[in-house]
Length: 306
Length: 291
Image (cartoon, rainbow over all chains, first blue to last red; front, side, top):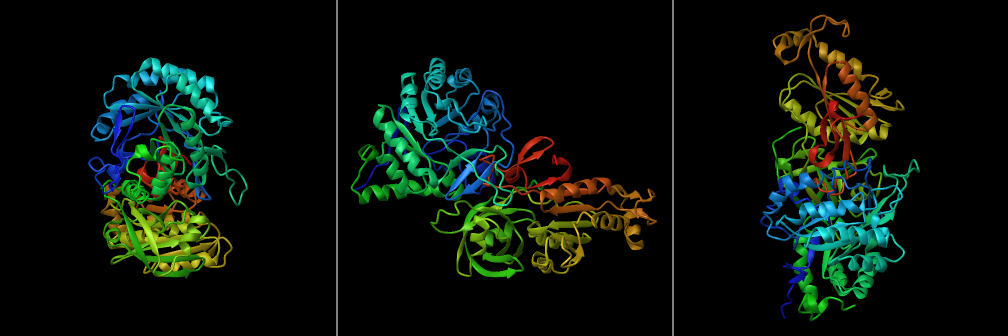
């Protein structure tokens, strides 16, 4: 039996369920630096560029990265060139990709989400918009807008009013009840939920015993957070009648299989690409093998099996 | 600093040599393409091949030396990644992404002073050899904490080297910032034979040494410094280079995740704002860094 990997996210049709997590893969830079021709041979089923904000952001004080046990702490702080530069400089190039583009936006206030969504609304290159309401690195207390269901709903409804594009809302796990935030986003007009962004964490320098990160605290990613993410996917997909994109520590085809079984319609990989830049190219084939040996013929059959 | 672009790829490489060099470990592996392409100052993202998730990510490691189809790296085992790399033995395999980064710009002229601090000396052996092969007069100044590290100076073959240790257990005692001004002045003054060549080279920034600083009659030649080491050393060096009118290129270290410009994690504070060590460095003009 031949398993099919085709899947969809609302109006987006995907050749397979594996996409990249925002901020972990820059196709323009990678194509310049690496031998591979990434524009014609793109490994992901959709492309999510790094989150952009209304105004450019320089990002947080370095050091911004520190590896922990099977995990990576980061405190990048949404460093980006700003949405207008993204639209002018990057979008025309990204339009060469043969896969859908999911633009990722974040705001320093709820109104920024409406403004950014409006700037993207008329851009045909953009198939969908991800509202990143969950970056933990913008304020020291890490209190992302997505920690509050009401502020999340306000950001989503402003974006909803600005565009009819497929709206994905990316949530933080750093809350008491992620389902409540997901429901608030859904009620405000979200089309899809992404879970999870990084988990709050910190690390001390082994010698000085002071925080390693320039920002003190950061977001943890990598295999260490996979169980946290898997649970979030399971809870949110059961509670809502919306497609869910699962992410957080996905490192192997077995992880992809489990996230789909937990209820995800698509799965994003991030930190694992840093570990193995060829992972994304291998995963679809490995996922198909894992489905076939289990007698699973489609993503639809797999989704929500858990 | 170099603009010419060399495409990087991912390789699976067998380790063919693993031996201690003092408190460091020298690892040689077969990587024909990297050996053919890599330039001094470029780096590789390196991890032990295999499924283990801890350590998770590759580490940015400068190319120490190339020898036919072999690539050599020098590892200081200090953290989870480097301890894992230092544990590799002959027959083990490495996952290698590279060559990455800009590398040093070797196109200048005049005498070259190669300055390394600690494990920062590792990528400079390849650099010193390449500079010599280009006919540059090369002098090396290497600083370490202790003798156990300083024995790595033996890896700089056929070079004129001054070694310093902080505890005086090998070579001179102290930080390299102490002998640096004197060595620089000596190189810039040159000997009588150098004064002649420098005189014919005046379009290249050579200026008369009549400021009394060198104490040597004749002509002043602009030296160029190439350095890699701890930030504090590079900051001190940058100041000294400026005082002596010498250009300096510095290779900056930062924790990295992707190595290819995506994650924005390895930024260095420069006079033009944050810049990525991986894709915009790791080599910068000393004057570009906001020390």
